[in-house]
Image (tube, rainbow, N blue to C red; front, top):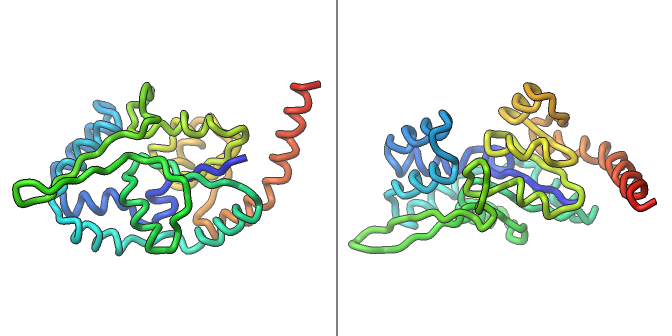
Length: 227
């Protein structure tokens, strides 16, 4: 059994990528965002074009990332997962550097993270940034920089936690979904079973109550397949 969790808006209070773009990319990033939301481009292309617009030094970028907060209940959630032998993977269509920096400030540096890969270089007196998709993106039907569906397939029993558009395609491909915000609305519209939550403090007791029955059902299914 494994836990897979989105980052922006789920673990982080603010969407770190949107914060960086709003501060350092000018208004053009919003035009690209609209093209993605209207279905003209995939999220992978959207992110690559947006990240290329960033005009900021590493120092200024890090200073902004230092202001991003995470859900106050997330550390307790991680402690429970560790004690329960539940591996946690962050799977995000965001930026690996942003995620690692934000978590490192909270003393969290041992989680597996699957996300788009940020590259930067200094040339002609300024720093420039490029984004490369995760290896999981190859052949993604949604055109994402991270194919979340492919990532979760690595686990035998999957728990998924998310909040937004990048979580839509994976919601009906896992065993248990915890959803809020846009993801909860999406699940409602399509009849996808889920457990609603507001934050990790709210989520944790629900997970503790549900997991025993999920585990029993999974074991019964495995037994029927091998009988």
